[in-house]
Length: 551
Ligand SMILES: *Cc1c(COP(=O)(O)O)cnc(C)c1O
Image (cartoon, rainbow, N blue to C red; front, side, top):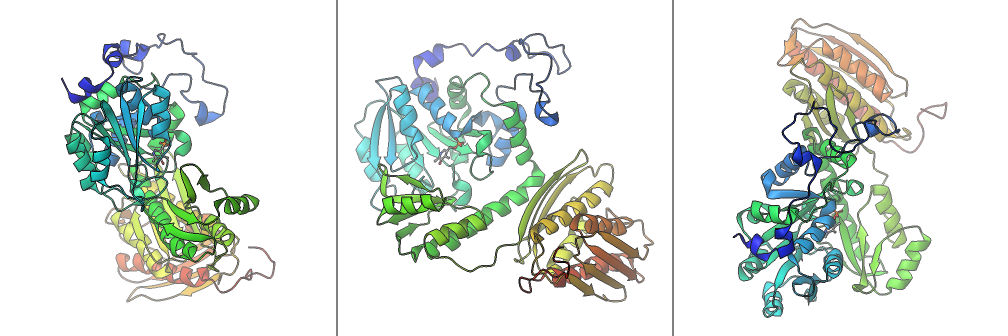
């Protein structure tokens, strides 16, 4: 008998799996006539895509989502169950393993309140141990504190810890798991993506008493969709999953999560996480200078933990300014947790703490563009030269867009998942449209920009590019190419790319190109375009560069 089966509540083991129509009829294909689940044959009366398929029950454990999350965390699908957020996974574990009044759950405080909440709900005994005075976890002290506790079924550890941010060293987690062979150690990695700590998901798969919790709420911006999972060995997962509700995840949430986890989104997610970490690391020393703050703990979440002299006065001040921060007077009396927001939100927070910086507002934008032909995610930052990561699926085009960003002097992250099995046309055009739209969004009201750009020759080929970021699309292309393709890139697309960019960026773009070699000519167009953009995007003040007063 596996450890999980020995530790499970007897009721859980005695329970037959919930009898749902899908399971009884799983031999049928997707085209079968579906008269088994008392669903309404008509979709709900809400608009378009929202309604599609909503009259049907979702898959209890959606195979595609399990696959995507397993790939994300580097485990196999049978190593996880998906739940309504990690919160639900906590509840499921407590209900699967803790007999009311008999079994115990340990927590290390101050920490995430859900562990104690769900333990209380189930009537499990709560063993509370304290983190040390620096809010660090000390394995020896913890093990000494729980040494004599009978029936300790679950030991919750949170790394990085909420609300203090402190990570727990992998060695300490494993020491606890080794020392407590009859306890399931549950490591909550809700914020791991924002920290430098390695995940223990692979260890959880290998061991019989380690569970890792994950969530899409924090790093993937899906808190409203409620998607999380527990990762462990397959026996443990199968036992715990018996305590799940029959259809834990709504179809809309499943679709939202699958869209967010699509490969074309990964680069922009990584860029976002890097940006939030950079903002956190920038804010920490500035907040330390605030007269209202005693100390700043920058652990490794998407938040900072601030220790302050007068939390009540500060709470009052923030309330008046309309800024919500997390005070927990009982759990962390002298402290508060401040989440990292957008640049504008962070700037407002710094002003509230009396340490405003006069950084110019960032000119950044993110954009996703999905059609049947392409799925694209793009992020630009006009005031940063890095990162540049471009993956259109067409290496030569990647190289060309990289030239635009490099010569334009801005950061570009762009990934496209397109129908290259047909040809490169859709991917090339749609990437240009998405890129131009992202540039336009980042420019905002176009205040303070150079507006005009000019650029000229490259080797034997010569390309002239003139730009006016006028807000009005217009494109002129003079020149032609001999070769049909450069690599997988169709040369006929170059005029098209500049037209798409002109349209979605709202710019007049005139390109003239001549020369002997198509590769050089194409590259000259993109490089010259980057150079012209560099001038036109440049911030030169605050004036609107138009006598009309609007662009
Ligand atoms: C936010 C949070 C969770 C819960 O995440 P959901 O997936 O949204 O339920 C779990 N653990 C910790 C430590 C958290 O801060």
